[in-house]
Amino acid sequence: MHELSLAENVIRIVESAAKQSRAQRVTRVRLAIGVLAHVDADTLQFCCGLAARQTMLEGAEFSVERTQGQAHCNGCEQNVVLERVGIPCPRCGSFDLQVIAGEEMQVLDISIS
View (cartoon, rainbow, N blue to C red):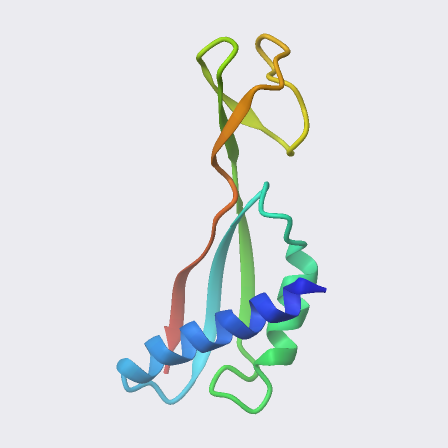
């Protein structure tokens, strides 16, 4: 379950940003995860709750927004939307695709008090 190690990294990143802002507590964290990132959003949210215990994020609400996957098709030279890795180009059927978006994971914003 690599989501737990990802959650621990999220906690470290958010805690560092919150401390720089002299926050006492983080109440909300909003994440963006690409649909091609091989991350289960529900599992990540659960793991964030676990990793947040005994930190300034304990009890914080974690929400996840999915971002669209995109690839450049070398067959038809078009940028196309991808729902998952391993499927052909929806325009020409080629498997010669280069992912250009959808593998990222980022903290969009946090709410502090």
